[in-house]
Amino acid sequence: MSKRLRYQRHDPHSDLENYISYYWYMENDEQEVQEFPDLLIPDGYPEIIFILEGAYSKRSLVAESQQTIVKNSSVIGIQLKSLLVKRVGKVRLLGIKFKPMGFYHLFEEKGVGAVDKTLTLKDFGMPFLSALEGALKQAGTPEKALTVLNRELLARSMNSAYASKKILVQTCIDVLLQAKGNCTLDDLSDHAQKGKRQLQRYFKECIGISPKQFSKLIRFKSVYKKEVLSDTSLGHFFDHGYFDQSHFIKEFRTNLGVTPSHVSSEKFKKQNEIAKKSSRS
Image 1 (cartoon, rainbow, N blue to C red):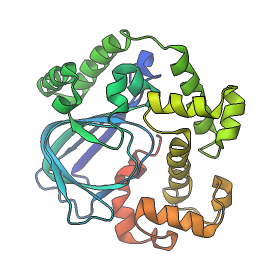
Image 2 (cartoon, rainbow, N blue to C red; image 1 turned 180 degrees about the vertical axis):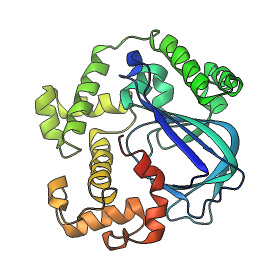
Image 3 (cartoon, rainbow, N blue to C red; image 1 turned 120 degrees about the vertical axis):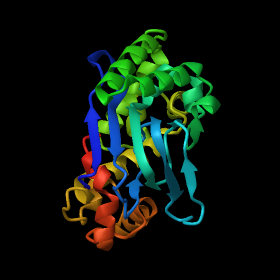
């Protein structure tokens, strides 16, 4: 991690822990040069990134020429594809990493509609977020900005109730997280004592993707944290529910852009510095 790059994580107010995983703050100076882009893999957690200063570029792993410059604060729904992102000059970014059901609890159908999209605050259609952005830019320090976030989101969280459907989906998500994604729809149906079609419908309505899709994201994130970021052996694919080595390598390449044999390269390590910093998620 460059000494000219400041990256911090902060816990939300205790009354927001059911909705928000963490806040993060990133700032660099004018002289900081990012040699390699950061690799961001899907993890099932939606996000809002407030751009307080500067911009960043993003592109997919496979479409190197299709680079997009992001200059506006954005809502990022549950992502399904890995991205490479790079700071453009001096930046100050403040992010909210939401829990899947917390995102739905706060934004309902608009949150579901953001799956696999990056939407400006205006396009997302929740005017209070634009007002919040203005308050954050005026806060002055990261600490004051976090106070603003907690205050505004606490007020927002009190305006909707957790209906029985939300509770059921949250219970299923907890099961999938505990199993690190290695759980079949049949097992989930038995645990919830609900039919598979009903579970699939509830997941689509509440987080925008199916239980199977969510399981897949959680499973690979578990592999990434346990075996890639910790620099351990990558030979335990059966422990994560993969059928065979070729299945594992295919998904590995899809999410990370390289095969397991390349994770020790300097380029790959540089692309994962921020991920290591965020590995509590």
